[in-house]
Length: 260
Image (cartoon, rainbow, N blue to C red; front, side, top):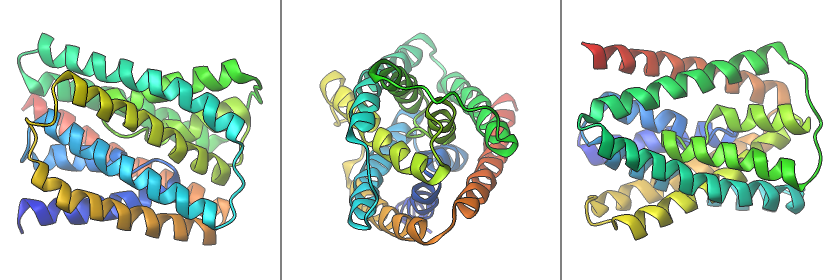
């Protein structure tokens, strides 16, 4: 199977699951493409961001058409923080690429931080730990800043920590948290893509790949949003934990492989 078709099917599957669970597809796309290792880490991070960005648009539109009520005060507060966090995350990512001549070290840093966030999300969701029920614009901003930073730095579009942190800080039900997570992912990845454009441009990437990535992202986002509307909160939680375990295994394997 060609590289283009592999990317196409990986992104459809990842974005479908990502839209249902609120993780965004990047949490699956990034480690799977790292495993395949047909592109450098900077290209994989870019392709993953584009796929997740497109998915977030498609999924949000589909959710709103399905009658989901969204608090735009929360969205705008978190989005403002996510935009700044996205810029900061990409700046740190570029700094790592410059500082470490070996890309494997950068990938290893991403893998390590991703594993930490996955474990936090898994334990928090499974054991239903305390919720803080914070209110106010400053907390929305702080939440978005952290989520945007991690999403951009790790190249995973937000991943599992989005949902867990939204539930922890604001006491949101998990299905509602998945919707706000996808909204946050939109803004953090928009910030990252804009940063890449002004910092180095898109010339170093094979843009032909976008003819496969964008349609796959749209399909995955649409299917995921439709499924999300028809399943229970308990089922969403089960899917959430199953995806975390799967991605944990892939990331741990990728981490060990870098040492070999």
